[in-house]
Length: 123
Image 1 (cartoon, rainbow, N blue to C red):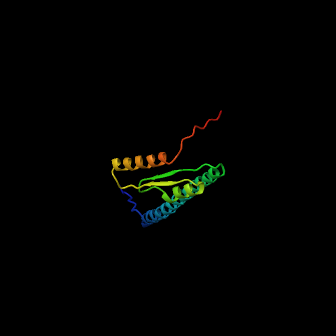
Image 2 (image 1 turned 120 degrees about the horizontal axis):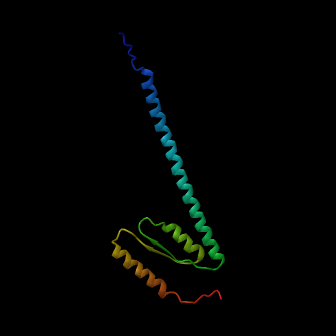
Image 3 (image 1 turned 90 degrees about the vertical axis):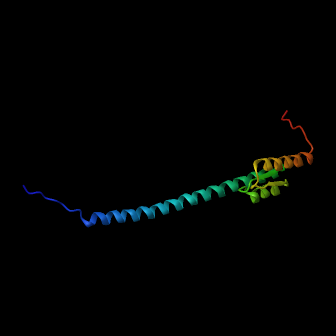
């Protein structure tokens, strides 16, 4: 009885190598699209926030902003406060939770002490 043994061709291993390279290139392209979409989303969000601040200014509403933590977008918060004639407060990160809580309490006291309270009613 004769058996026929078919040896794997070199072509199939070459194809596997080509598919691996193609997959790697496509992964890089896909990652680029994801990063670009995230950036575009952040730009759209920032634009929307600045438009809301401009609308508040038109309605003569001052916005007080608080940036909390090291990753906070302090420049955006400062812009929103500046557009509306409000004030920006920064509570930097890198501290313990109790330190940040104390800084927030100081900020809230400062805001409350500098504002007169008014009751606003829709009636």
